[in-house]
Image (cartoon, rainbow, N blue to C red; front, side, top):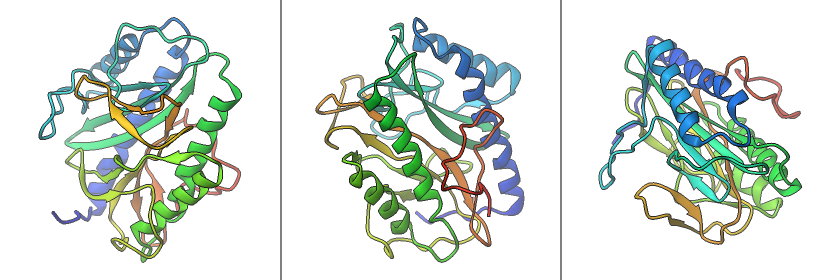
Amino acid sequence: MSITIKTAADIAAMRVACRLASEVLDILTPHVKAGVTTNELDRIAHDHIVNVQQAIPAPLNYQPPGYTPYPKSICTSVNHVICHGIPSDKALKNGDIVNLDITVIKDGWHGDTSRMFIVGEGSIAAKRLCHLTYEAMWHGILKVKPGARLGDIGHAIQTFIEKQGLSVVREFCGHGIGQKFHEEPQILHYGRPGTLDVLVPGMVFTIEPMVNAGRRELKEAGDGWTIVTKDRSLSAQWEHTLVVTETGFEVMTLSAGSPPLPAFVTTTSC
């Protein structure tokens, strides 16, 4: 399968879908507190996507080969859940961390982003994990420019994270995105610099490192979707969708409520 290079018109349409996805996270932010269920967060997100944004929640009934249809409109991964956590009636409690992963389809184009949230007062370890995972994503983003290679992105993330005594999940990765939810190329969050595909303008993909406080090994939880840390250590993930520009990158999944940039990041478009 080849990498799809997006035209200027394609990218303009994707900017809209990506902004809408980020705005769903803005809407959800005040609701992420102790006592709320992830099903309630899913309901709020679904209603906003469908009724306000006039868009489609991409995860709902999404069915890759070998999977059952995903039953909800967002993914809610709590504490030791690495990814694909299914919303439920279990309430969030003080100290939990949760990743909310949003993908919106608008006019046939996908926008995909996720953020970490700390419920109430998180532990020092939980705050550190979420903070460093956010920085790791940006270390990867800053490697994006024409002529760079995908291995440069993964290497930047892996070396940063492992220096902190944390581990990078290898079985799940970022991906190309456009009129399909998942396209080529795969964006590994580990690797060697100077390897894999060369970046060219018009490539659109996600960078979404999954970082564990303990070991990187994982297992399936048994519902066909949810992936958890094997040692039950905390896991964090952040995700942006970006496009390779003529001179660098443009992060497209930004909105008014997006978290502040790390101190070492000076621009979201170059």
